[in-house]
Every structure is written in structure tokens, then in C-alpha cells.
Image (cartoon, rainbow, N blue to C red):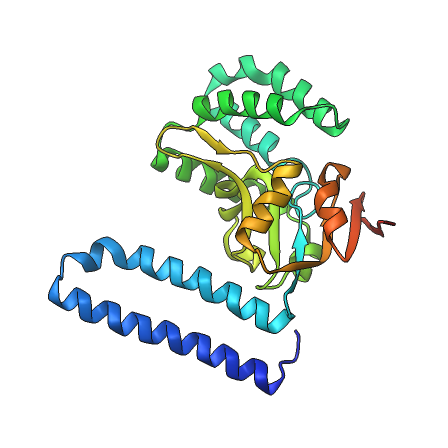
Length: 253
């Protein structure tokens, strides 16, 4: 862990003090309108936590953070493809999409799949698989009970709370891993769980856009990936590493 300097500790204490102050003000308002509390308190806490996590990371790391790809980097394989196979066992009619899924996976690996085509195919599948929020949550929970053994221990040991994971896979799927990842800073494709609509595809150039939108003042210290599809982030990082067959190799830029 990084040893903090006195000024960093002071700033972190200030950030948490603001959290407490905002919470007190919020509770005072809810005391006058008690119905607001159960409706808005969870969202309030989540938003506040995300904000001060970014602030603390900026103070501790001087604006630099480590970033990890997920599939074939932290996870041994393509989590989306494995999740699709898991869903096929639950919903046999999805077998009709198997040839398309395999073809797209091959084209993706060969860097021949355009962002538009991937979005089109992925949109069709998410609407078929995701029926509603409860259905998706139950599937994801069961999937990780069966597949958490594919998370690479060497990367689980590397990852710290301040690190960022960015992936083309749905963020909701990666968030389902839970505490094993040690970080809540996850950027991925976004799905409307009520409709199954794919709202955002975090792929190629979109990855860099998503990162800059989420962390506009943060620079990438180290970036770990298995694919040159991530070239925009590779170029943006101070140091980049290619992960292949258990080996981590620096990428010359």
C-alpha cells in the first residue's frame, strides 16, 4: 500500500468531513419530510460515496491511477461468452444465436468487428436475455457462484481499492463479482435492466471516452490488457502491459 504524506491525510479527512456535514444536512431535511428518507437515502449515499472515492484517489495517487481490462486479463476467458453459455442452459431457445456469437467472437479477436456491428448484435442479444432487473440479478449471482474460479489470483492480489476496471462487458456483470475485485471503480457497457436495451457499448474508442467522462482529471499510470483493440487507452497510459498466457509484457510505444 502507498504510504500517505501528512498533507494527503489532512485532505482525506476534509473530504470525509464534508461527507458527514452533507449527511447531517440531508437528515435534517428528511426530518421535516420523513417520506423522503426511504426514497432517496440509498441513492444519496451511493452518489456521495462515488464522489469522495474519486477525490481520495486523486489525492493519494496525484491524479494517476492503475487501470485493468477484465476479459482475458483478470478473468480467464470472455465473461460475456461464458455468461451467454450459462444463459443457453437456462433458455434453450438462445441456441439459435450460438453461430452468430461464435462468429462475432472470432472477428473480435481478429480486430475485424466494427463498433457498429458489435453494438447491433449485442443489442439483439441483451433484449433476448435480460427480461427484467430481478431476473438479471439472479442469473448474474448464480453465474459467479459457478465461474468465480476463473478469476486470476495474481490479478486479484494486484488490484487495490483505488484501481479502475474498464471492460466491453456489461458493468452489471462485472459488479456481480463483488468484494473479490476489491474496487468499485468499474466502467463497462450499460444495459437498461428493465427493458434489456443496450444503452452504451464500452468498446475500442468508446472505452477511452467512458474513462475520460468518469475520471476527467485522472491520468493512467499503468494499463493492463490482453488486446490491441484497447489502443486508445494504451496510448493514453504512462505504461501499458499486454497480458497473454499468464505473462505480463510491457508494450513499447
